[in-house]
Length: 236
Image 1 (tube, helix red, strand yellow):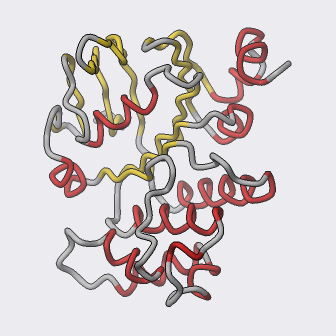
Image 2 (cartoon, helix red, strand yellow; image 1 turned 90 degrees about the vertical axis):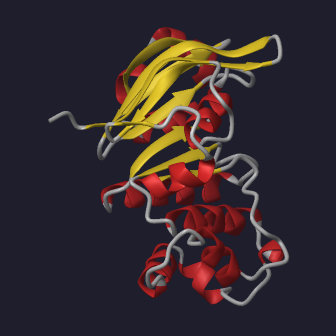
């Protein structure tokens, strides 16, 4: 039996006459951290949004755990086990930390107390600020809350769109440490990240996207030493 949890085949995403994603294919294997790196406008976010059901693909197919989920509604895709941490965090600023976490479990009908504790174990600062409004948290704490909210659906695959964006270097290191911990606890991760150095260090597999196409793929550590990647994304 294949350990492929997600297969994207010949995916195209268009906005009117603009072709944002131009027939890409990629695979994510169970238990991996996979990263997509590339410049702004490369099509990375459009790819994630299509997988999450937030954009309807123009062509191609998306297979998750053997099921064709192409073009399905976002709520169906969450139920099947995919959640997304959006760029810019998008927490609910007027809700408390705990209320934000409960929103992440809105499709569940079982007891979520154990999962709230799981998130608090991952992010002790969120437990300390449980009754604080989300909008009063620091940028790093809001990112932790966005990740925790996505985990409340108990996903098999969590997708993260630029989790380090706008964060101080020390906070970025914390976020990537937590990403590794979440993965070690059994959650497969598909990560978009402009901090290519950090992303490639944690990734099992990496894809480079340029103007809507995948131009390079390989093991994360291998791409760290690739001359073209170093010149384009690592500043060396």
